[in-house]
Length: 160
Image (cartoon, rainbow, N blue to C red; front, side, top):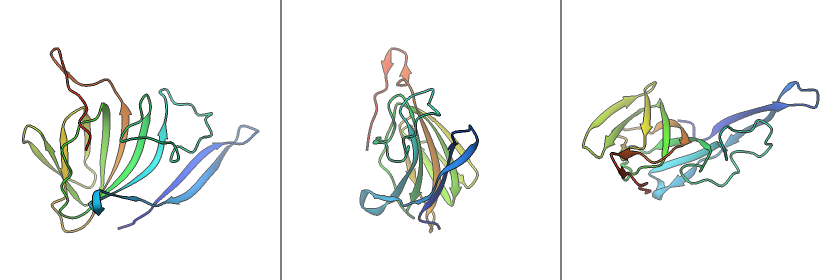
């Protein structure tokens, strides 16, 4: 499994022609004692995003999400790892790139996912478990959202 992520970022020259602004390898950061690795690939600080902002989105300070913006992150899950339950105020698009991963919801439901599967998280309380014997890799796009509601009750964020 690759441990870095190649990122190619485009932009425009002074004539308005499309060019490559950045072409680099991004190294992951170990999370929670090595059970997972996070690579922040890009982020925006607002929506709609600005195509004129020359800030390197991987250098912006963000949490799991970016208030008012978006985050693109690659997550590598160690074999046997189990994340804590968590919920963010975001819509998350999770794409399994390599390996297998289980999505566990606080209701007790579990879905086994494999490379090519896509999960759309809508403010739900969930955990990830890698039941395999090799690392799993997912790409996540997190879009800031209003908190989920059930009737009059607001479901608060639960951060690990």
